[in-house]
Length: 114
Length: 114
Image 1 (cartoon, each protein chain N blue to C red):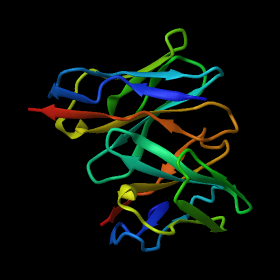
Image 2: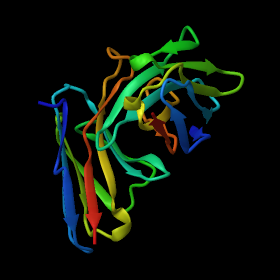
Image 3: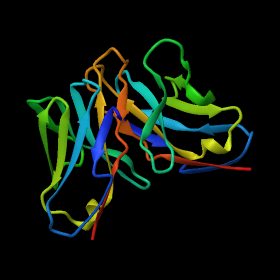
Image 4: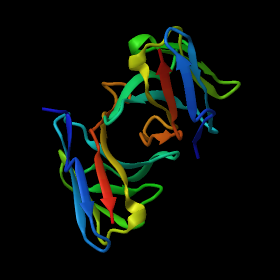
């Protein structure tokens, strides 16, 4: 069975600084990987996803993530954050092409300070 | 109108009461899901449905039941609510392939059991 570990529960960061959110997964088969963002009092919005192909995936709002199969990781990065990036970020994985059940990490709260 | 609509947005109910959370979608997706979100635990799958006649338990289905009334409607019921079911509940839909395993989430229902 798949599982997801987000290594940081809270990440404070100053505006215009870079940020990296770490995500590791465990699975015995091929996976599809996702990052979602949840702004305060809102639902989840897809930032980016890895299905196949290039291991560097670019998403919305300047975010990108790199899939590393050997390290079973899918870390999310942004080179320069804004106050508006303050949110909770979730890494998620699904194992099989026809499974469609997403397993989520516990989430990382990013707080951007001026 | 939102693609995935959840009602109510907020609800306070008493222990032992029966409550239904409703979800409707205009995406035309066959697959629908109910998740609950708890601080520090991320989102956990309660039930999922691949079509009107196919309903499956997720990882935390005890104390919950669901009904798939139509392709567009998927309801979650708490037969006898208890305080540890206080959480934020999300409905989601997914497509088989045209959107590349894209999930669409509703805005959530915040349920408080007192």
